[in-house]
Length: 128
Image (tube, rainbow, N blue to C red; front, top):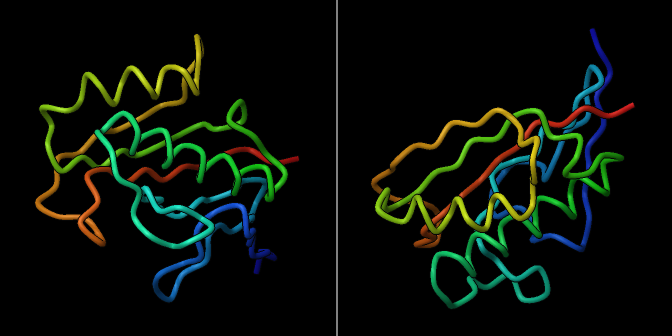
């Protein structure tokens, strides 16, 4: 059996259910889906999809750093959008965080997300 370690940081929102913010196993960091919660209050931020995506990616980045990785080590993400019509705006913000060599990604339209969020993103990154 392969060892695993739990990643937890106060720089990202606490889990709202029975899951870890992240798990390191087998040279990878698996980051649970993040929604646009303010880490200080645990409350959903207000704002348009761009502001919500930015908050989600900042939450992801905090967990990645706590787990010994960073945005440059992300190899895969999944984006869940409540409204696929917001895909172009999500993409603009996403591009800012991942630059010229973004990770592999799937984007899925969903009927609902936790706490009424409009976007959720999870990630897998390499750690060494």
